Length: 236
Image (cartoon, rainbow, N blue to C red; front, side, top):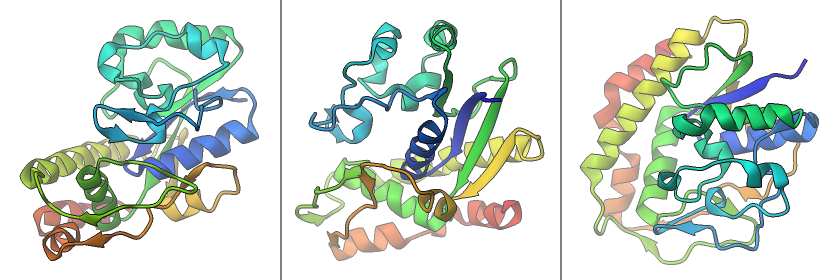
């Protein structure tokens, strides 16, 4: 029997690929990504990505409520970031005979909902490099045909904030996994396993960039998260 499915862990491409696979293999699952207009520019407040592209010709999506602070993000990404609209949106999805697939937010209480959890685990050093690069260039997802332009630099970047946010975010992700990992409704998937799933997705791996020496050193540095790396080795 299908259930609401919440995807946890760090990698954005992994979670998106997972939801494309799930919704393609089970017509009762709904993520809000089914009718994205890929011709849309997908830019919000300077950040770029499929997450920000508009959804068209989807009456269920049009009936849902969104908070202003989600900045046009797709339901899949922002459903749990809008607690005031969560119950109403979930009720509308259920009334349409669907089950929600969305990104899980660590600390968001879903204990009263019959659901499955999928945790996507990507090696921490790789996860840091992907996150930090996305922050530096302001682009979090790439689609077929898109190519990078210019050299990646640290110009204007708050590198301390980036490191602190990443440690906080992944600490919460590890805490969440450790809390629920032995539950029967939890499935662990490695990033490699998820990306290998055969499904249609417009997203591609981040293309090769060129970097200043300073930017390259920053992306390769993991000394600031030594405690997290130790915890990673014990958890997985």
